[in-house]
Image (cartoon, rainbow, N blue to C red; front, top):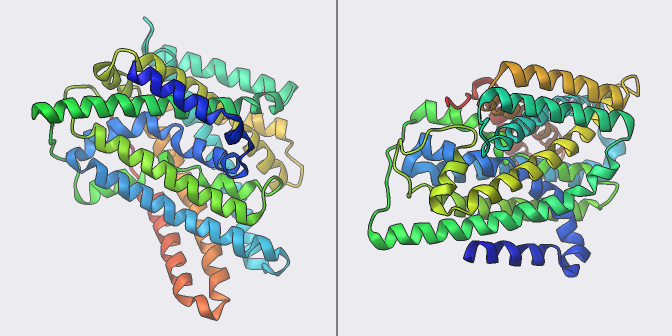
Length: 396
């Protein structure tokens, strides 16, 4: 009852007229939905299995890394977009490369979203296996291609606000359930402290392969037609603060209540975990997963089509880009598992963040007062390159 009450109250608050009228909230919706969306479904079981009692430390490191990359993107919004005429050829070339890389990152992220959609879509059925999950993913790919090719995504994009509110409301209910479960374990003196299975370099490279789970803040940069630079900077910062707080609460409550080996690590392990916490949670979680993954896939498909059309000067139309995206996505679906796709997507986004940090470093270096900042951005660019080179997938 407490879980359902939390879901209803959160949904009413998020869908209320004041929330809908709030410019800051509307500007936060897109990055917040992207940051929390898929990561919330897979991060808990992965971090718990790999890092044990140190899972909150790993989560804090992921949030900090994402916030620092967001710092570079926010700097670019504030400095470069306000002085577009003075960018210079080096920055223009880096911007072009970043657009191409982001387009390909979206292609892989759509595969990530839709493979999670397939896995969660069959998770509570009698055909809960990899074959049927891939078949469902394939069917959704065909649907998205058909809609994008024939009608465009404008009608589906209206679904985003509702799906974001539903997802955040269900997360509120999940946190209430986890808090009650954690409190019961604490009161009984049965909290669990698992040893880490990964340490040192292996732990770091696994973290590199998970950066996509806290990705999505960069979407604020591409909302310039709707919001000014100051609003995009502020809403991105707030979205990262809010998502970090939610993630940290989630991991702190999850990391100390399950015995090592109690559950098998899989892309839908969170469903089995939540069934132990409260019987009502699996159905709610699957509903949130399906809505979130579908809306995120539509948003990234639409975004990648526009990016490829812009990068090729119109030689590749958005519809042709959708077909390319679906072709690559289906190849990934039938040749890799979800954890491998997460690693590929992390590397692609890390490459994009490395370019954004390099752009910020060049811009800051031109300002004699910002040499220390330029070095910090250069360090972030190097970190992005390291993630691209050394990120490792989870072994399910």
